[in-house]
Every structure is written in structure tokens, then in C-alpha cells.
Image (cartoon, rainbow, N blue to C red; front, top):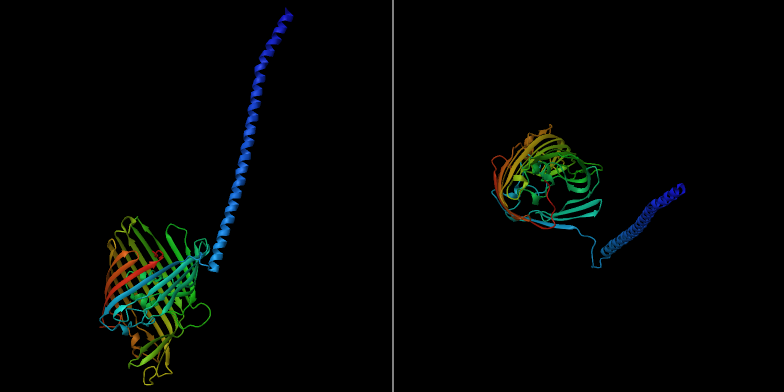
Length: 468
């Protein structure tokens, strides 16, 4: 009985162990299948990665070969392709003008004439005048630099190199470096070319203090702060061969300028910008032609220090930020200049106040100021109306013991004013017609000049966006 029970128990144990052994076999089979699938996927991924590397390498080689071929084609000039693809634009300007006083004899009483007659101030002839026409060429030199060229055909039928400079791209830290000949960053309107002005002529303050525009031949460093509020700081240094400098033929930096601009938004409809600028130069023999108290022709030159401070402010409004239908632009700038040094005048006739060809030299000092305020309102699509008020104060010049104020009538004190109204129509962003009238008293007391302009401005080819 006992032996029978033991045998039965042994048989039951054997049967109980059969399912466990089968389960272990199934698990082993699953593990092997998973391992094989994993190995297969790893091999496939490795193969795909190799194909990707090969494809990228082939693409890079093809791109390099294409760039090399394009460069070689451009250099050989075989006419099949060109690697030089600049932006080229042409701005045409002209005006039909009428003035009540002789435009050829225009001068600004109380202020040193700032430049060539055909380039400064109102039109120098009645009837049709082709104003400054500009040809611009610009392109990226490489990923680090951009080049810009602007040639201007002046009313005097001369070609002027207005701008020719390089500018860095992606210098980092908000810095930009510009070198060559360029419009200075001082003030607000100075960096705008004439075709982008809101009136046909420059404000009197720009004419009197910088000869319509201040051009720098040198280097500019500009820093844009990484803040939500717009903040821009800039420094410039270069030659001072243009007004208010001039005549200096020495090494080193002859003119220096510094400027700071800040701005921001007020809601979604208003934007503003304000700035301060400072210009320092040392003109040497800065000359102008005039007459003495007896009406004899004289040559007057100044050497010394010239310092100019500028404050500017701009406010723009457009409903909900959309300037297409309606917009308003208010703009104003204030200039103050002080000069001290020596003044020399000479003339052919020995009976004049300047002592003949040998000339007389005396000390000279002056403090002059001026401003303009203007508003331009687009009351419906394509149509704008604007008003500008100019006012200057020449101050009373100070001379030494040799000369007196009456010896040089050009520098006699005066407070010029001008009031201008314009209306213009833009058939597109590339074409504008403008009608403008002004009453100008800059020639002197009791000599008001009534001016009428009918101007056209046309832009052809590539045309970059204007500054704020």
C-alpha cells in the first residue's frame, strides 16, 4: 500500500512539471524573436544613416561645384550666367518753378553761404529744372559685408558721389560698422535722400547749418540696444571737407559726430522717436564769395572751431497701425551752432574794407540757432497735405578791432522765416506729383520771395525701404 502511494505521487509530479517546461520554452522562443527583430532594425537604421551621410556629402559637393561653376562663369564673362546680382535703382526728380525774386541771386542773410549755388537752397532758375537724379547700386558682398553706391546728377549738370560705403552684416552684440562716404546719422532728416523728403526742398535749418545734408567720409559705429524700447547710439569720425567744415588738408580726423536716438510705441496707433546729436569740426580756410559795404566783390574765409548741437523729434499716427488709408506725421528739429576763430577777407580793389588782395584778418565768433516744425497728413489713400514753418536766428557776429559788422553785409544779423504748404498725389509707391507754395524771407528784411513748385518724383528698379 505504501509503495503504491509513492508511485502515484511520483507520476503526478511528473505530469505537473510538463506545463512549466513548455512555458519556459515559449519564453525563450519570444526572447530570440525579439533579439532577432532588434538586430534587424539596428542593421536597417545603420544602413539608412549611411545612405543619409552619403546623400548629404553628394549634395554638398554638387552645391560647391555649382557655386564654383557660377563664379568661374561670372569671372570669365562668357554671357551664359552671372554671379553678380546687385539691386539697381534710379530716382528721377524735376520741378516747374516760379519765384518772385531772381533765383540766381539767392543768398541767406546773416549766414555763411553753405555750398554751390545750384545745389543749395531754392531753385536757381525759373521754369523747368531737373533736380537731383540718383542712381543707386547695392548688394551683399558676402555673409559679412554689404556695399552701397549712390551717384547724384545735380542741377548744375555735374555727377556727385553722394554715398559709397560698406556696412557689416551680423557683427553681433547690436553693433554695426560703416566705412566710406555716407550721410551722417545726426538728426532725423539727414539720412533721407531728397526723393524721400516730404517737401520739395530742405528745411532752412538744414541749409544754413549743414548745407542741406551732412556727409561724412570716414567711419561710423552704431549700437542698437537689446531692449523693447528703441535705443540707438552712434559715433562718427572722418574728413571735414564738406560744410560746415572745409578747406582742411591734414591727416587724422577733421570732423566728429555723436548721436543718440530713443523711441517706442504708444498703443497700436502711435509711434515716436527723439534724438540728440553733436557735430564738431575745425574748418581751415572755409571760403565764400560775397561783397563788402561798398559792393566790391570779396573772398571771405574762416578758420577755427565749429560746434553744432541738434535735437530732433518725430511722432507718427496711423489708425490701428495701418497707414494705408490715413496717417499723420509730425516732425521737428532744432539746431544751435557756435563758431570762433579767425576771419580773413580779401578783394581786388584796394579801396575796399578788406584792404585789397593782401586782405585783412580778424577774430570772429558767432552763436546761431534755428528750427523747423512740419506736419504731413494723408487724409485719404494716395493724397497728402503738409505744412512747414522754418525760423532761424543768425545772432550778432563778434569781430575784433580790424573789421566791423558793416564791412561784410552778408553777415549782418537777420531772423529768416519761411512758411510752406504742399499737397501731393502718389499714383503708386514709385511715383509722386507735388504742388508746393512758400513765402521765404531768408534773403533779408523786406525781401520776401514767393515760390511755387510743381514737382515729380519717380523711382525705377530696386528701391529699399525708407527709414522710420
